[in-house]
Length: 408
Image (cartoon, rainbow, N blue to C red; front, side, top):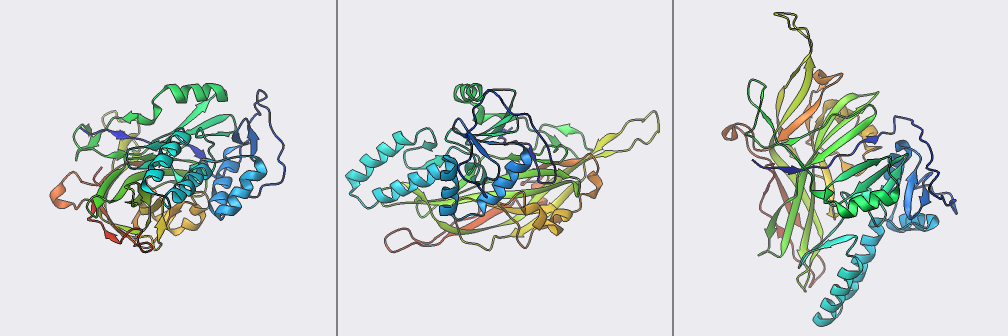
């Protein structure tokens, strides 16, 4: 039986208004200038502090829409340096090294590894920012931390964790002394009668609280191309969202990226296009009213299943991470403009499979998804097809990847 690394975070959406107590143990710096991107954020001991989740989500939306130079100016006005800026600075320094000799390149690369070892994970020929996602990297400091209300959120490479009733120093100690990026969840499955069994692996969801959403993600899978000089890697995510307008709704995304080796053998992010096709099975959880037959007086769960045929592709050329929806509640598809206000980094495109999830109201959710299906002969596993678009002369070529099987 496989296990899956998960990502889970609970955000309050733009539709909710909340208030939080100030932490009197922390010294706040006054803003030098008003920051339209970061809103009411303040700098406390090197990390951003937001008064509530509403302002946090609003800042995530606003910052993502800014041009890089505008965002960096916003940071400077706060005296703040984000994980994204650190990553951009690293890539600029690596770009400069590529213009040098082989000996100078590797000597300089070793120095960069030492300089950025806290923020970036390095292998022999690749590197990855130690942050769970692009949007989070705009708001997290070099330790991957941001404060929202009385909570500290920690964004590591493979997980997001919320710390309650702890000081910044306590959060730092725990994140540096515990391997929290490799948390595991048990796998369950449901047979045709609706009872759990340990057989089929899948990615399970989590119910969202009032005016919030949850996210869980599979580990990254990857495939090579161009004789091992190119890589495409991707993972699946399942979202559950709740708000007063839509109730409980869900959607599924694929997040992917493409890289190619430079002339010195280091994988760099490159421009590419990608799309998904095939089938996924979505299992919902709804609470059924009692029948009052033979003493049945309590509500019990029911697990309707939907086989989704997906065929969607973002109509954009990207360099870096892209995340696009492959299946979603019909309600969210009809209102994706409003949803994008709080999930601005997720792309809604044509070809998304629509799901009628009205039956899960008022207290159900998207329970789990699987790509390989309980009866594989009747279901085609979903896959991602991608192409790297060739760069400038003597940089990297165009590469057509074989389909990346997204069975999870």
